[in-house]
Length: 389
Image (tube, rainbow, N blue to C red; front, top):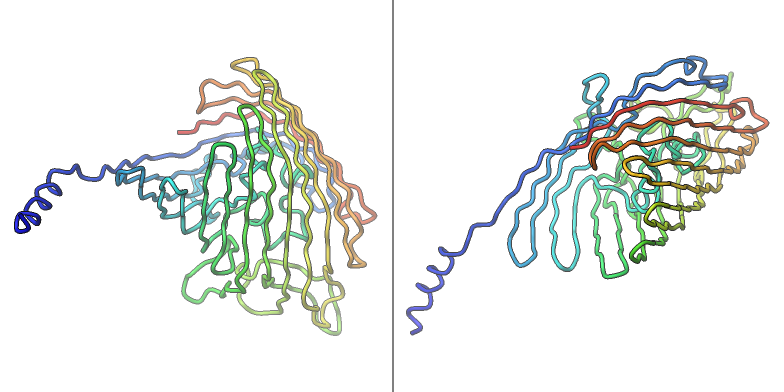
């Protein structure tokens, strides 16, 4: 009998079905016409008509190899593709390899941050349009100068060189990304590029509780240390510092270290016709080294908060949207005054199907500060068409 076991094992293996692999091409195409009115002193060209895809367009491929026993190998590549210009972009999207099992999903690569995709953009039906809340005082975004180097730790960007783990239970879900390198979304590996490697400890994590028609969550995000390139004058003529991500420069000049952390809490109720969303964020940025003498000013430590409230009324195939938000940024450096921000947007979405929509809306922003740079208004009317596939 013992001699037959290897033969029986070989026959059983040959008879078992091969692992099934599915390959899907996915993406989004969007075109949007927006009519801007902007009183920002440094943005006179923003008035008038703009034709854009608002960073929505992309193209990718998803690969799933079913190994049986509810286990699968995953792979994904998504690339930014500008719909209105038919041009590829260096803007990073998702790219990972992973393992899906009954114990959760493990991924490695360039990942969706847990902070960004818990609440955040998933609560805003105008996300990836000119009417979105992020970066417009409704949600955390590219609020310069605080987040010039840390977009992937807020509502923008993706975390590169990262490990991710997601698990969902009956009424609870947990999601975490941890970067083994610096974790900033601008990391590159080309020969001669400035290194972006930093200290370990960058992460983005979220815990969500949910029922049939409601959910609540808590999310946190941290970038422990990140080097930022700075440009300015010379010692005889000090100038205000200009900040850019280290990899956007040529590797020369001065650098400083900055860290960033954020936390948010929120929830959503989704009924048959009415959806209510709430979110509150607190954030802080620290300057951990002083600028050289050839700069007249530095950022200093900064902190603040951002709040968002949204309402949607569904009358199929249409959805009415109204949402508002506010923001406050406290700047310790003398040359930047505190900034107050206000956001409001309203409009309609007509859904041709689950994967295509027409949208029309209006956005208003008001920022107030003693500094002219942060005291301005923005208004925008928008009409757009989107197709997901």
